[in-house]
Length: 255
Length: 201
Image (tube, rainbow over all chains, first blue to last red; front, top):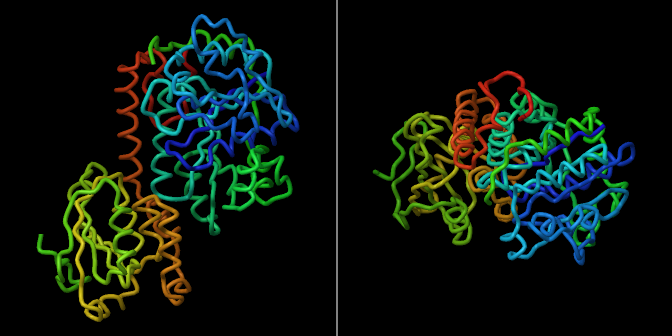
């Protein structure tokens, strides 16, 4: 079985990467989970996962002719398979976003859950690709009007490509956002997976280069992410079908 | 532009124009008012009127740099509702006015138009750090006065027309860009309000 989720937000700074790794670790208690940094233009998953010095990254897989195997860019960390992206501009420029499809297809054949940490904005082909390829999208928003507006926009893009909404994750919540969460569920037509409180634990984990659930597993936000993961209700997609879908997805030739 | 809000609900003296310009980020205006501890007001006219069905014109008043009231002179909404209506992607045409201390006090007694000190920074400028800085500068009684940022968010989520306008705009943008990016074949036919269709083949 495999299901691919794009973790997206429509804007930067909502804590998408923190959320991707936290959901990944929570899901890894029951599933085989692979996390991919699909934000090829502004990679930062590697910093969150202690992979700053990773020799081979997704960038290498996205360059034609390097013959790098997917396994070389896949690292076992914190109970997850992690495919980080490099941070060099040269790597980004040489990368062909279309090749992400093949990489994802290969990863899909050997995991239960694929989490694609997606680019913040939707302004390019490479940015929209994770949302196109995924089965469902997890929308990470802060409970503010600008973030919800962008979240609605991401959902509409996803829907345009036949990608369902798995749910909305309220992040960096300062006050009790219960009323707003109820309204948001109605608007997004998907559950609010959790209200993750704004917390120093998240900032400390980031500074330590560790995922939140490794750094502060007993913290309140960690508990929220576990609840969110439990509500995702991972579906049993057939590996072959999902991999074929990725391989056959229409993908542009140029970045 | 008269610099004075026309509505009977909000009467404020014209004051002295400090600056008038188009800004992409209202945060710069709010930060300026905060840093100079301005008592006065800003008029905000979103240049993106698509989501507001016509002209919108907002007034945000300040006491010692901290936002007190918000008002939309087109819809006559006030407080969190006005903030929600004004919270659109920039740019905005902004005019900033200084008013003599004391001259705004009668207007500032209108509780119905009040907003949380940090709400304008959060909802209009999407700037949490500025919101925190504004709350730090706010007098204690303003922080305890009840009401919070969620009121504007709730007003936004209540607004059917606004939400539909955002969706509509995103749908057409997605379709337009799909053509541009050669992703037409991945689009789902007849994407509407119902459940998502089949995955791209």
